[in-house]
Structures are given as structure tokens and as C-alpha cells.
Image (tube, rainbow, N blue to C red; front, side, top):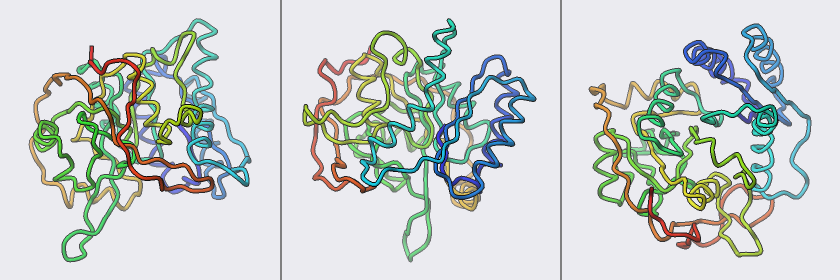
Length: 314
């Protein structure tokens, strides 16, 4: 987990994390948290969280630094660097002969215990390598009304290689994905992150482990998000089962939690259904971010190859 200026939401996040720890058992968990450059009270809240982890005897590494972004920076290069710092204990534990089955990476999204437990369950049920919820923020709808809209459009790609639309009721051009999402059933994707991701740990181990990274400039690789490139690297290593669980929706602000009840009908939870994995797309849509000191992609969209191998899902 990476944190920056998250004072307002941390009490909720940490409370739910301890509910998860209680369910999974402290012996089955290692938590790694990296924070840097926060200007609010984030570091003070983290300090209290660390004290509670020690009381629970949960293995952890909590790292806080005052370092800020350099004067000239590339967003993805910077984010990859801080995300990899959160992964550091994984390799230190490996040297001690300890390996983990799954890695749960959580952005500064707000969740309930059962959201995360459901993601972990679905990753087992679907035997998926990357398992994600949907995340949302608020956007303007008809009559200028605030409505929920899908957030992670830059990263998420459906199994046809296209981006997700912001409209939660009309997110996909890919017909099979559209039908499954409409029924709130898990569906296959080429890539997802969406505020949280349960990752198969295997690609992170061995002689050539995957890590968060910027695009390879010498190969003119499209300058996608570090999370998009993580998906592509999973595909390259034949870890290709990517699943989105659409009934799990994560906001980023406390006030948006109530919108889950206000705007979504109380429907019966669908029965679990196994994803029928199909071949991936030949290319995916990429909207590159090449400029320094910019947070938004500005290069023209293009369809690019994302693996040097075939795209079969094994």
C-alpha cells in the first residue's frame, strides 16, 4: 500500500484492514506500507496503525519518508518507484525462505472487509492471476445530476482490448463482457487495477521477477500506466487470467459511500459463475503519457501489441 495525504480516509481503511486480519489470521499476513511527502497528519495516523500491528503481532514494514517528487519527474517512473518500495519486503521475506500465495495491492480507495474477502475468494474460485473490483467517482449525468462513474479508464481494458466507458450501465463495446457486467457477474479482461488488485505472487519471484516500471523507451513502448505495464508483463510471462468482479465497487471519498445505497438498486447477489477464459486481443488501446511533470496522458491513442508471444489464455 502506498499513501500520500490520506489523513481523512485512513481511520476507515485501517479499521477494515483489522477486520480482514481477524478473519484471515495474523499468521497468514504481512503488511507493507510506504508513505512519502504527506503534508497532512497521514504520518501520525500511520504511527498509531503501526502500534496496533505490533499489538496484534502482525508482521509488517511501515516506511515513511519526507522525500518529495524531484523538480523534473515522469509520473509513471515516479509511481513505479514508490510502488516498488512497498514490494521490498516481499524479496526480503523470500531470502528467509518465506513466500506468499497472493499480493493484495490497495490504492487509497475505501473498502469494507467483505469487498476484499470477496476479491480474494474470487481469485481462488476463478484461478485468476489478477482480480479487481470496479472503482468509481462522481460525474455529471442527465439534468446535471451527480451520478457514479467508473474511474480507472486509463488502465482497465476489456478482453477485446478496448477501454472501459465511465457509464456504469454501458461500460463495454465488447458484447459478452457487457452482458456479464449487466448481470453483475465476474468477467474476463485484458487488464484491470481499479483501486485494488489481488495478484498471483508467482511472477514476482524467480530470476526475472515482474516489477512496476515505466515503458521501455528504447523499444518505443507506449507510455502506459505502471499498472497497465504490470498487466502486460503478466501476459508476457503467461499469467493471463484477469478477472473483474463488478459487484464490488470502491469509492475514494467517504461522502461517496452513501451513493452505493442511493444510486444502486438492492438486487439479489448473483450466484457465483466461473469465467470461461478466451484468447486475449491481438492489440490493446494505449493512451500514452510522455510529457514530464504531467499527470494526464497527452499522446494520441493507438492500438499496440502487449506481448511478444501468442495471446492464448492457458
